[in-house]
Image 1: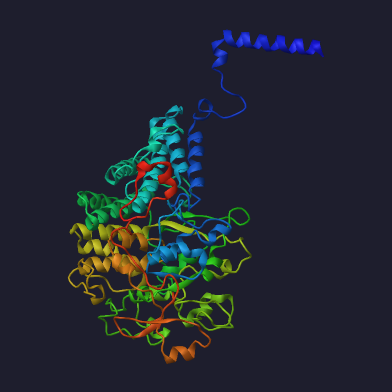
Image 2: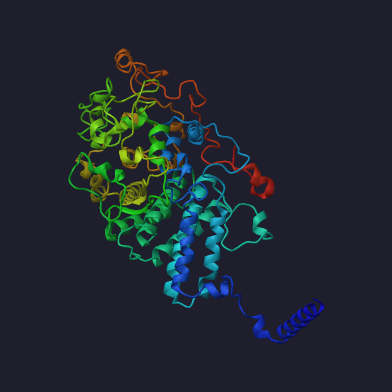
Amino acid sequence: MKNINKINVLWLATIIIFVGCNDDFLERVPLDNVSDATFWNTESDLQVYNNNFYDLARNDDNVPIMMAHDDGFDSNNISIWYLDEASDNIVAQHNRHDRYRTLRAGIHTVPDNAQLYGYKGWNFIRSLNIGLQNYDLANVSEEIKDIYRGEARLFRAWFYADKVSKFGDITWIDTELSTASEELFSARTPRNEVMANVLEDLNFATQNLPESWGDGGNHGRLNRWAALLLKSRICLYEGTWQKYHGGSNVEMWLTEASEAAKELIDNGPYSLYTTGDTEHDYNAFHRQLDLDGNPEVILWRKYDPGQFTNHVMSYWRGYNGGATKSMVEDYLCTDGLPISLSGLYAGDESIETVFENRDPRLRQTILHPDDREYYNFGNSADFEYPRLTGMVGGEKSSTGYHIIKVYEVEAAYRSYNTSWTPAITLRLAEALLNYAEAVAELGTISQSDLDITINALRDRVGMPHLELTNIPDDPRYAGSGVSPLINEIRRERRVELFMEGFRYNDLIRWKRGDLFRQKDLGILWDAAAEARYEGATVKTAVDPDSGKTYIDPYGDSAWETPQFDENKHYLWPIPLSEISQNPNLGQNPGW
């Protein structure tokens, strides 16, 4: 044993002497793990590293930008479909969606820690910045390096734009930090400076990302067209925020938004999905389980049976309480006029009359009683719809307006957590709406602009065109502070993008806190309704405008009387845990 120990000591000493005298040996890289010196070599290495961004962004709560449906059990409360519950579009009816209800009611408080979609995801920024600091090590052309730089910078711009929309000033980080980095204890970077950096990232991405990754139309990776759509979205947000909240670069941001959207519209390979079936085309592709090759979809999240699945359709049918009266009333009549001006409006005395002579998107968004069989809604012919809270059997709605836009019966009734319901993240229709709004806000909109945007969307469903020389002035929008034209473009956006995650942010950037203060209502509640919906247990409220009584879906709950404090609710509060670690962050106004 002693001899063995002596041999080991001599062998160790020999190694130490050899290493100490051989500089080349000291520079050798580890053979059993990956290091910067061994990894960053080929284009494949850069692509593999950037794949990591998509994996991190699958956690929509932590990195709330690509917004799809979280996988597994988490799809119960993290999905793009739920975001409208924080606005005046949809009512939530499950306590797992209390975060959305709390935002809607304006009763959120300063949190101890980061909340849903909140002040978190900084590991994502670290990952992006590590890549941006190391792409230069690869033995490939600058053109190839710029492709992956562009992908990383697009993600960074998207992440920071989201944070700015929620928190205003936010700490800009563009290098890899350590636990001792001074930036960890700095004050937040001013909004204007952050957004200037965001615009630089967006421009770099639109100039360097490829138009196609050769994915055969699978829409799984961000390309140049996706970058243009995101640029139009982010610049439109910032331009209208500055216009209605105060800012000095309104025209620049709106021009950037319009130009990005127009380039995508004019030169992109996408077109609106249509087969000529005006009664079904609008919701047909929202109900598909495979979107490969869809001409309108630019980016979507795919789920694979047995590997990456969700249960979102099942949760959706039970957790949302239905669309609101306000939402339903925004659909035009078939003459192109709002219900307040059209002689075709049949009233809301019954659920059936609500649908008469209306924009076909209404019936493709909200369930008409006669369409139960077409959609196989409820997976049973045993019940008539709508069905309200308290009624026996079937699916229940707390407003009476069941949402049908995304309903697919197979996915809705699959075994727990075995569904592959996809999520559309980016589609061409948004670019059309972004462009129309941007040029309208700039005051440069023309009839041809309306024809390639608003009217193209209306053509899909057979609705009359919007004419610059004949814009309806809807009295329901009195007090909006904007022109009838902008009101109509905003209406079109609400209708077309319903349940796709835009409404809350739209109201925030337009500074329409007054709409948050309006109570959500459901269908008309009178003697006929009481007799028709036997067993329903509903609360009611009187609509102050019409004097009629409607279902009050929030009843006497904590969300019954929504609030909105103009002095603080346009931004979210910084969590106390973050301020305790770095007091220099400060707190947002009013919180």
